[in-house]
Image (cartoon, rainbow, N blue to C red):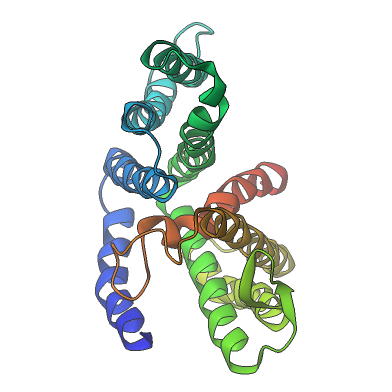
Length: 268
């Protein structure tokens, strides 16, 4: 399993770096739409969401990300395509449930996975588009911190972890692993900060940012674990050998992306 994880990372990481850094932002948007669509699909397969709701939810997720591109590229005189897509998507899923089933007794149970998947994945992934507009380095920084935190937490947690962190949600996560995640975020910033102009932030600010992302990654992982345990699955899918599904690789960034976006707003 560890060999598969390392081999997959060695193949994927150089491609990911050059794909983020070299092409224009719209190429990243295409990747974001693809990854979000697969992650949503995995979420709906976990919960066995009715196809009549799952398919529109995935399509709405793609429309939401594309609407952010329109909002940033064109001026709509106060009209917000992103807010409109969110409102339209919620209304659409309610209307679909209203007219596809005449029995109202299961309406909340039917709608919950579709609406939760839409709010949990594409809405949170929106932050990454705004980070990319600040510069491709911020996407490398985000995923570098998240993956370093996640990897150090995994190896420290399985190697010397003794105290369970939150066994009701994730039996294997340990306090030692959570601490390692924070340390991993801090250490990764020592390298990743060189992607940016000298003096952009102090080293203390970089380390604090890495620590916050490391801590956020732990909480974000636990949130996905909550869903997987509720659905009775170990991984969200098997899309990436040795790593599980796309959602399993995105889980830490789902919370870390918005948190990084807010920190940049406050610090820069």
